[in-house]
Image (tube, rainbow, N blue to C red; front, side, top):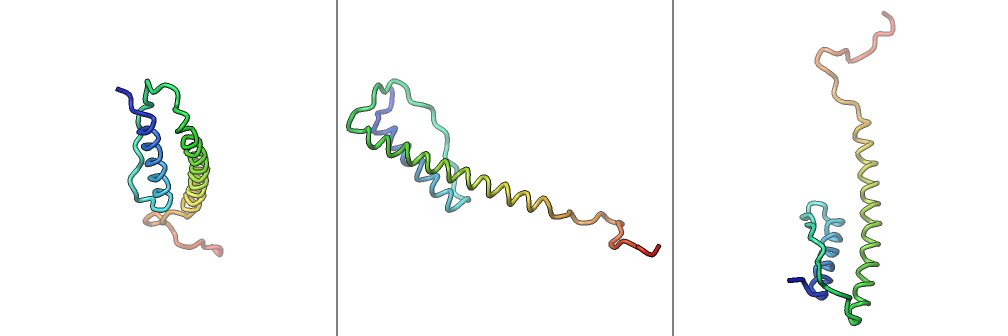
Length: 98
């Protein structure tokens, strides 16, 4: 049995709330993927505005996630640029005088 449009939009709204929470608290649980519901038919006119608002909100959150991803990549690049600890027995200085 297919979900109703009200249920699908409610679940989408809850997922968007969870993503917003994750952006503020990365330790928050991940949003689980869910299958595209089938057999819903056309969206009822009374839900069109709500669906469009959720679509706009998805776009905003997608952009925020891309920004967070880019910021994380920059941080990772900085961390990777830090030299690793010296190997045991490796010289600590360079003898220029010979």
